[in-house]
Image 1 (cartoon, rainbow, N blue to C red):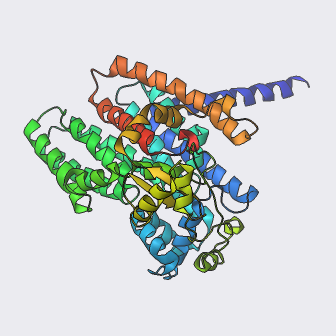
Image 2 (cartoon, helix red, strand yellow):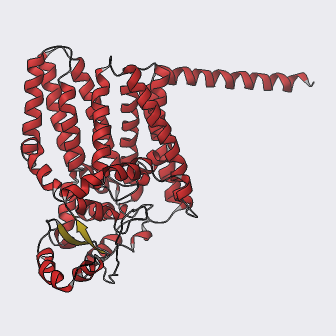
Image 3 (cartoon, rainbow, N blue to C red):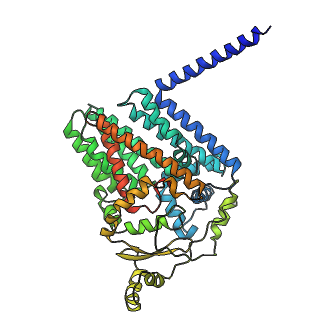
Length: 453
């Protein structure tokens, strides 16, 4: 009588063991598909769980995209909305806003709809990582690369909330995969078609974040020249892409116009990124509060389901006193009188005063040498910090600190992989250049800790 339960347990154990073994075999045999499915499943679970357990948005910036999508889906997004800022933000992020608005029109304004869209693109990024890794690693290691993107907490976070970051990284990863296909192409026609595809991916990424798209374009140009054959066609195609693609979207030939303007406002970028950020490393930061709330925001909030946490979005009023900020920098009253009027009327210059929608004001040093001097410390801030010892009593920062240690170990593994595989695999050129370029640009322009996402 006792043998029957034992046999049943053994059978269940064997069936379970075979199922696990079959799953492992399937996943290692199909690393790209497996990475996509795991990443999508995890993000959907997180999206649903946060919707049930947390009222409102997890990250404040979600609110502006949800409100914009709602207003656009109802035909209320006009030039008067948020004093024109709303329409401008919609246009500058249209690759993200168009599908989000369409989903709102089809299924109604709900945060979970946007989360599922973002989760899908987060899964695409994971699949692209596995696809690239499979070009020079065994399948099990390619699966590991995809699962890193699929399962790391910060990766899950920013691709489970309604932010454009998920689409940006999906675009950069898709560019990397397309560059790899172009490098392997021996057909002139196929090379030309892939160049056109790269141009379209570039434009789509420009309509998410211009600087990310330009960095990607500059990095992919040398990568396109190391294909297997037809060097002349590659030089022509890559040069046309580099010159004309940015020109089409108003950034100048090769992005020269945008780069020239950006070089003179890197200090402003750091300041805007740091002001009011919990993870900022800003200095000389003063605050004043604004009690006004834009009525158009309140109007938009009423139509969104389950987003009660958005009421804290403030209006755009409240310039801070630039003279007070200049005094804080140790300037005399005569110098303040001569300089302050020039700063208030100009958005660009070596010294300017800026403010955000919460009324935070700050004197900004836009000098080029100051920005370049920030590179060593900026690399530490954006690529390494926070460390566990910096967290104090902040549990969220503590978790980010422990994950940061995992990323540091991955940096070491990546460096080892470049040493072992770099000479024989063209596919690594673009990702390596992109990592380097993003690191340097982040060091001179970011005002947040790197693990904010």
